[in-house]
Length: 120
Image (cartoon, helix red, strand yellow):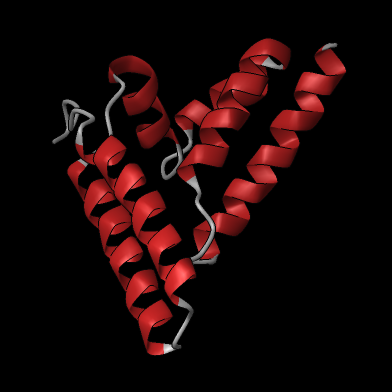
């Protein structure tokens, strides 16, 4: 079972790294999943992920406080607004736009109701 957790952790880490460079893919959610998998399979990789200068702080903020930083909240909401604006400009159907509004509003409500954490 440990090998499966390790493989899943490596898979999610790869997706998280890809997400750091592609604006349409999330990063933190995949790295949170990777951290959870590594916690069950590899203390060394779990420690590496938590100590990483770019990826570690948001993971620790979530694990310790259930928090999302203000900067991450701004980026998430701004990305949602940009994607919706592009969807309108590209003339997507009303059904797609309604689905986007519902899903993005749900995601935004979750994000905005999380605490900011100690680093604000």
